[in-house]
Amino acid sequence: MLTNAELPYPVPEVLLNPGGLWVFNWAIPIFGSAVILWAAIQAIRTGRLTWSFLFLFNSLLIYWMESLGDWGQHLIYSPAFTLHHMFEWMPLKTPYDPLFMPFSYATYWTVHAWLVLVLSQFLTRRYGWTILKAMLVIAIPTNVVWDFLVEGLATYQGWWTYDPGIGPVLEWPTGGRITLLLTIGVMCTWPNLIAYWGGKPAVLGLNHIERMCGLARFTREKPSVEPTPGSSPREQYEARLNYEPTISLWKFESLRLLAWVMVFNVSFAILLVMPVMVMRVITGNGSPWIPPDIFLP
Image (tube, rainbow, N blue to C red; front, side, top):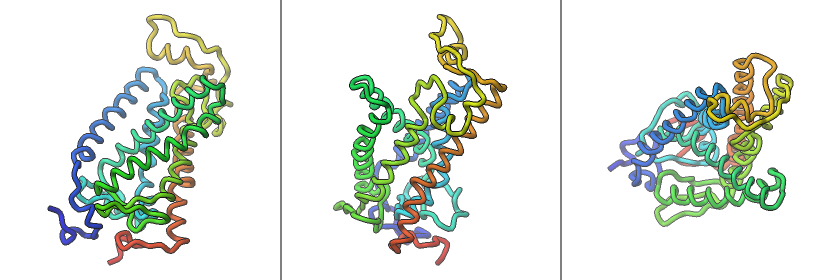
């Protein structure tokens, strides 16, 4: 049984010995690795950076900011998880970084984007709405319900907690705490915006990310057609696109990747990480478990 006496940084009692650790220590990394491998194989087969690969890769890439955001919102993970130590150089971070989280990042944001886009496409077909209107209607309620269910179960079980938390907080009988406004509020912005910018999974043309970054200047229009029977995966993918690059394919795909990396990182920092860090600073609301600099004694 884990005790605070064994830990370099103490944690609330609810986090010391939670159940279900195998889900996070084994199931999520294995599932996440399998999905990433599948997306990489699809990209190789088509000769293109597919929507799935770009979303998975960039969702994984922004993970380095997770510990900063956790510091800002008083989020502490159970030290009973298998941990990694890649972020020890950060002066501002949550004390314990679980190993499962990078894999969770890759799959969670991608599945979320796919879900809200599929639901939005259903509304556009049913009511003739634009995809933007449909997302404004369906995405936020989806976020609120999903986040409350996931965060509620996790904080009740002691997988992680917000202590003391900023704004209204619900404390479970187990001692776990969930914030009712700050975290759920910011979770309703960036995930839905990046899903909208990224476009629907079956992208036929340049999406908002690629157009915002000026990639249209390197393309010319072509008709989108149904692929011929028996054609290769690459030929099928190319047939469905309504554009073709005017520069070499490897240069164009490199520019696409760079555009996605830039937009993901900048938007995630501005819309999700910085708000919770600034909120902690301006409210002066500290945490006995996550001090201003965790390297201070």
